[in-house]
Image (cartoon, rainbow, N blue to C red; front, side):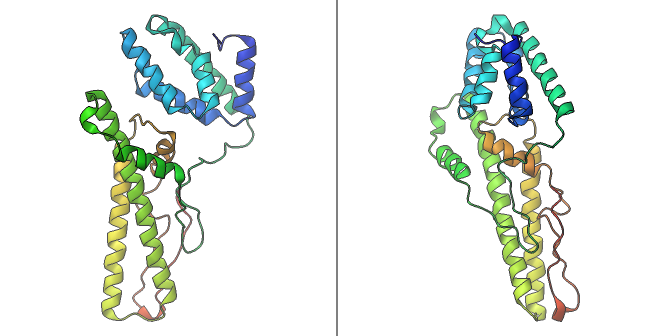
Length: 261
């Protein structure tokens, strides 16, 4: 079985962290091991099931799967001390790679928005669609208590992401309306302010839900990426920019500012 303390394996991991841009994958794996409390488990069955849970989550990441092997997590509950030492070795490699890397890591693959001047398009995401389809077919009555807890966390994360994306789409429509209209009546101006308040309220609710899930283990790396992005967004400017409505309605327009994330 591969061992991170072996020189060849260690060197391979170092190269992947520094040249392959896989530092975020390694950090996420360590974080998930902690969230699942793997090293606190005491029964072989629970330990094995948790390792398999990690393997399922990272099934599409060869590097993460190779780390699970190199950390020797599969050796079982009786080898937890060895696994803990190996995780410490990986953390040391991560620290070293951070010190020697001169450029920042690339942005998360699943960016919530493409920042532009007036609107921020919400792009289709096949990964998110697949998760939505998968969760919608789950028969909750057949889940164990532990699986129900996991299903609830994944479902809550998905709904927070979908709510935020829909709010961005609504805000885009609001900005487009402002930009394309030269004059507003008093009634339409009032409706505009109400719509702006509604959209911002929904955005803030979605961000609050995302923050409420901080520290929760999620079954899909895509949801991790979205939640991490959402947790960086300011509640004071949840859409990434302020839509200012001046009192002079003949000059009503949207003012865009850079996204806080």
